[in-house]
Image (cartoon, rainbow, N blue to C red):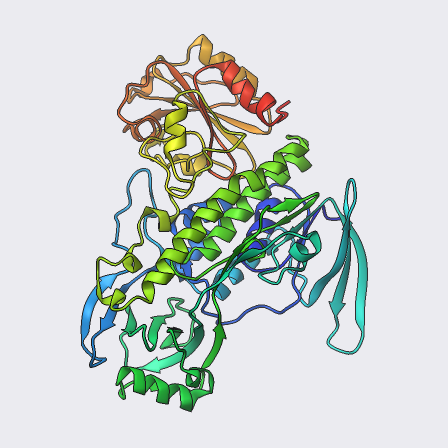
Length: 553
């Protein structure tokens, strides 16, 4: 059977898109012109929202097994040996009922990709390496592509293949973006940087080490958290207004430059060392799709690595377009749903570029890293990506909150009151009829919308009318949540999960301290964002049928 979707590029964005689509029953192929990355230190930060999305994809345990929470940092003074600041980039936070994984973790991108590939194999999908997209043509109902497979010799194997949709996850130099003619406007930052991998002895491996003199060189060595990595392996990040080229000239020159800039002669570097220079740029497309083709991740936006937003934003791109493609391909939504990919992601990415530019610039101000009040230190809710929202989306329905309240939130910050378009929070300690506990994150599924029917009056006729509309339909998973601890009050409903909010976490997370006051309905999308918050059945029907014409029959 021919695949429905071709994904070009096997980085985190492409792999997440492939996994999300395959879990939804969509056939995919994923190609990459290169070979798998090994021990590449870029893209190491995994923020809380990405951890949540990895949970719904079923890969979080494997991620957490090889990652660790962002550690403390030693920022050294003029002698290069004495820390003048010892601090976490983000303060450690204890889990709460609504945020189970509140801390950013570190895991090199090459390991991250390895885990994603292993999970893809469980769905019978493997990356087709050394295979490039030469050209493509988008017609009325399909995309016809020409693929070229390198054999390692002078000959190449060419294949013509057609797909319903094409996703470009092929990086900053994306052939998909270029062939679509999408703009990629932006600017070049004035600061070059070097990334690399080194093996160093003589440094504690439970923290980052920073020698901060942005007027000359700012050097960061961050320990590789992966327990399977070679001992004493660090990622190196070096930047400054004038870059010392010796850091690129091999092991001996690297060591000479390091000693000169840090004064440290007690650190030993092995010959297992590589570095590469890059010039951070800030660019994004003016739209994320054209016809049957879409761009995600670095194909759609590039920026400074400050704040670690790139890979995480790429994962959210992939999750956003994947559930919509799945809905269309399975006949549960009209083609027009795909137009909302640009509508939702463009303002989020624009806000993200502004934020990363601000942090990047602050990093190179005089004494910034020694000033704990500098914005260079700020890794608050925006950076954790828990406040990202789609409140301005055309497919969001909210009749519980005022238009003024919905407009208050920045696309990257959210607001104090949960509204449609916001991240769907976790709620543990939900009890079923057998006395077993579950949580909302264990109920949400990437293959369905979840309808949460909250009722302070029990299972009323009004509640049953809502349930009868959705309980036999594959596109919606109905759940009734009763705010009571009285397990004897359970009433079984066929094909419906009935839960008691035993400790009140669900009601508090979604409605705050206000009394529930009858029935309220919350739709949680497959990407774990709130699609609708309403009171009445007719308003629920508007979300499913009229707003973006989802077919749930």
